[in-house]
Image 1 (cartoon, one colour):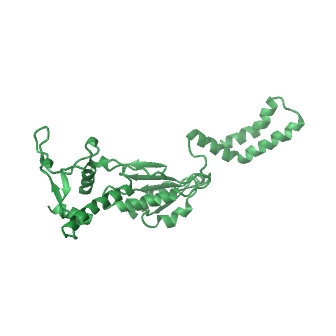
Image 2 (cartoon, one colour):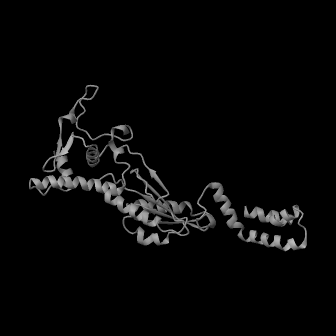
Image 3 (cartoon, one colour):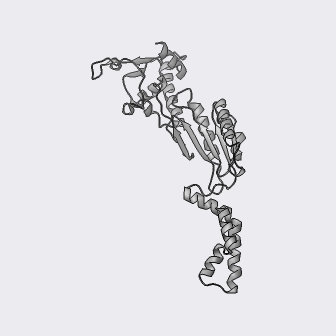
Length: 294
């Protein structure tokens, strides 16, 4: 657009403002220098003007910097972030300088904050893999990842910040992120998720004993409408049957809410274990191990 404007206006000898003034009949000498002054400003700011026009047409953020972009890839699994960084940087290895990218990678649960967040500028892109915090073993890891993304997204300049995107299974969007990509789940339900769903529904079919062990009522083995025994199974998918609870019951919890929910479960089991004097089975990992053994 810049090239076309310069070639056309210089060739015909009528820049934009001067051409409009002449067409309007303003041919006096006093208007000559005024129109030429504004034409010179257009030539000087022409690249920025064209960038703004493109952003308005495409609906993009108009406060982003008009320089080379930086993409930061974060993932708690180091080889995933490094492989993605190598792949993306090789794609743009032969690009023009104006379309080049600066690609970085880091671990959001380790060094991404102190290595890259101070480099955040308007228009930077942060793509971060998010662990499935619905599992009790990954809840704190997801919380660390979300904290790193929120910290990077909190750095603002003239009301603008980086564009952060998270990718994961937990369907809870961070309030400061620009977009969240949710992956579908087809796996069976894990035991900790089943326990959390049951505790939310306040069902009597499953509960903890005084020692923190799992107690299942006969209703869990009741017959279904077709006359078949359901059996004691945790294989319920939120993709095929979201109305029955399953993974969908915990899919919209934030990592902080999941930590609180699992902490409440552990606190309840600890309280029950302390009443009978058995203090070795009150942690959530020990409870799950005992359930698997039974």
